[in-house]
Length: 296
Picture 1: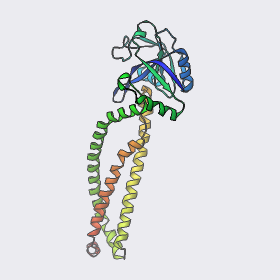
Picture 2 (picture 1 turned 180 degrees about the vertical axis):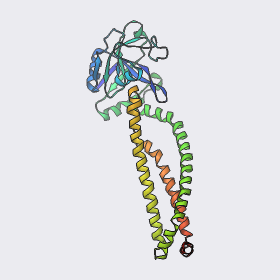
Picture 3 (picture 1 turned 60 degrees about the vertical axis):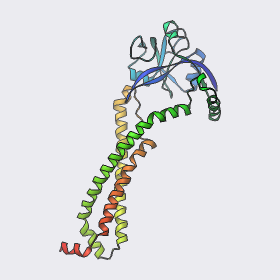
């Protein structure tokens, strides 16, 4: 466990939907070494930022995103669209689980006066202790500080994504209804083409319940197989696009997770209901005698 006094700011990166910020930490020399060791971060090129110097060490993905290398300059003085005030020279590039940039606690010069907000970082090696600390901090008056913890960030992200989720679900509903109706009508045509087969089976003594079970099994198997194949194709496509397009730009595109898969479930479900419903409706009106007469 460690409590670190730091200066925090944000550096601008490009994302799929525009711009976003990545945390910039202003750390002292001892805290910086502790951070590198305890977050399993490794220096890939260059060196750690020196105290009293306007230097910055950036994560590998940030470097790719902003086309930075050791010796490059970054900051609002170098780029008016940059969110990080001042001007810093990239001293090193590192890799690790946290996609952040690191500057000295006292960079010196004009950069030091514009670095960012004074912050206190709490690192906890014990999850239960970390949760206890968060609950204690949440009880303090909100106007005294700006708390950035897991629950607070989660709540903010959920609020930001609420409208996006609603839009996606509306588009998903329209798409599902249209495709399900189209596939349901297609299933009627396919069933009509096989009406002779069902009529023959019925004439041979197949009970209607057995025909219904057979129809539902066929429809369910085809739809489930198509759904699984679609997920596999989508996952392979995402991996390909990520490796060929986004990864070289330092943009992380995550693969399908449980939340993304949730949006795919309504389509096979509605297709099954439409297809099975239309097939069962035709089976209910099945007249094997007339079908066999027409075949003759």
